[in-house]
Length: 275
Image (cartoon, rainbow, N blue to C red; front, side, top):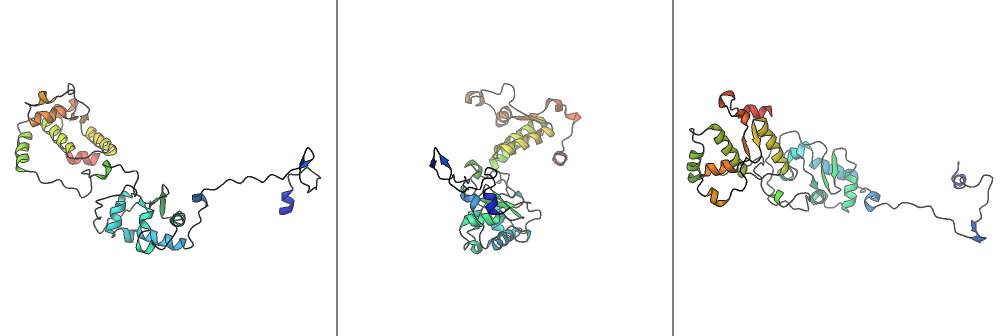
């Protein structure tokens, strides 16, 4: 069917009139078919040099480059594969000439190696699987506009970073720990104290806290408020030792089913491997 034939396909059979339709004998203009409007993002064409853009950005995130790029490793976290701001990538020397950014994004959407996140960020489709040859550059100040899902609290160190190390303890803390972990004390009391003090030195995001609780449960450590631990005021605690206060406030404790120490073994490495 020709385009001319197609334009009249919906007319009354046998009609060949090209006159304008009439209402009560008055001619009216034919209705223009409705065409949905496209958003700017949907209608954005890729950059004329889209292939070169993809090649360059894919190289940035390639095994060859990323494994030895301390700066970009710090941004994406290596195997963590955190999304990186495309605006930030466009600030790299070889990318500064490509404008507008919307056309750059449209070009990168066609990559088979990378994926766009939330329309403004980019990451590998498959995380880096080889060990980096350099240490990631520390990102001391991550800007919220680069990663808008990050809250102010999440910008602070948690103590779970790959290269994190606790500061050396002071002589005063050493003396305190000699009392807290005295071998004459029951093991259950010592391990509960150790867990409580470890938790106090870390910042707990919900996901990490959930995994930690499951790990503890797997090793025979229950979690939850202890009986009668509510309403501990300063007056009640003022005459208590550090060890007693830690025990009272702890939300992790050895399960009652493991209270008989003769029936179980302490095997930190085995629990970690099993978990």
